[in-house]
Length: 160
Image 1 (cartoon, one colour):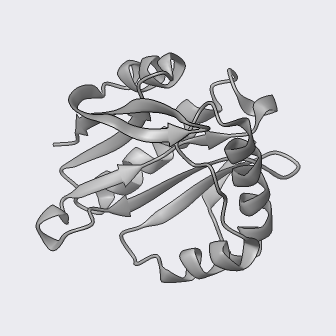
Image 2 (cartoon, one colour; image 1 turned 30 degrees about the vertical axis):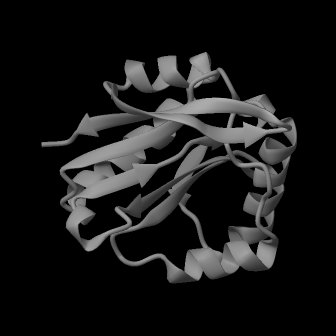
């Protein structure tokens, strides 16, 4: 397996992976995936301090986007997400993706990373805690999937 930055040519596979995750309606707050064209546009618009790292075997089996904070005052904060195909889960691939993403974040002078995790996704919470993330907030009933509301936990990891 290799880990590399995503390219425009990866947009179709990324869109397919995200559609599968959205259809599961369990692991993520993502319920509608972007099309391949929307993924291409997203990749094109990433600036030099943002990236999507992809884990590749015969094709992409996981991805981890990193974006800078939404507001200029948050330029020191990187938001990440981790998305794996069902066959890639439980194999340490998320951890390998994270090591690449963390190194990228440090090299690009981010002071911390944060992630939003559904409160019902105990596996993801455990994964991020094992990487050193700590809970720093909670958005009450922030996610609604199929009429069921779920809190979203905010977790952060200082990098410096």
